[in-house]
Amino acid sequence: MSKNAAIVARIFEHNTGGNNRPTIDRDHIGVIATQHGRFDGDIDDSIAEALAVGYIEEQDSEYVATAKVWDLVPGTTR
Image 1: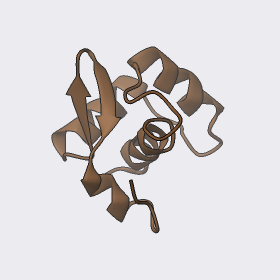
Image 2 (image 1 turned 120 degrees about the horizontal axis):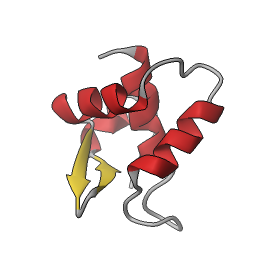
Image 3 (image 1 turned 180 degrees about the horizontal axis):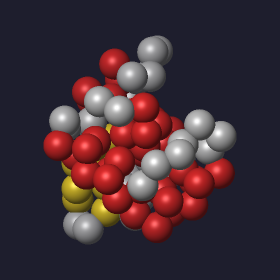
Image 4 (image 1 turned 45 degrees about the vertical axis):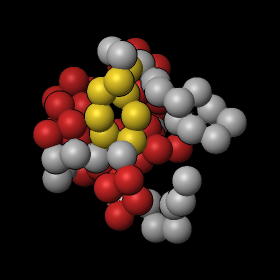
């Protein structure tokens, strides 16, 4: 998986669940990703890649991280 797709997957994990909304939409991820110092790609391509490898999934036209993303974020639990 590319660096940008991993960053996007981490953003989904850090910004959904717990005290946050259960899902997040593409526009919000785009804003967060563009503020991330290491993200330098296309947000749509990165979301598509993260979806394809199963690190995020779509729910009601928004997205949520899967348990698989925990491998990208050591120490992450729900």
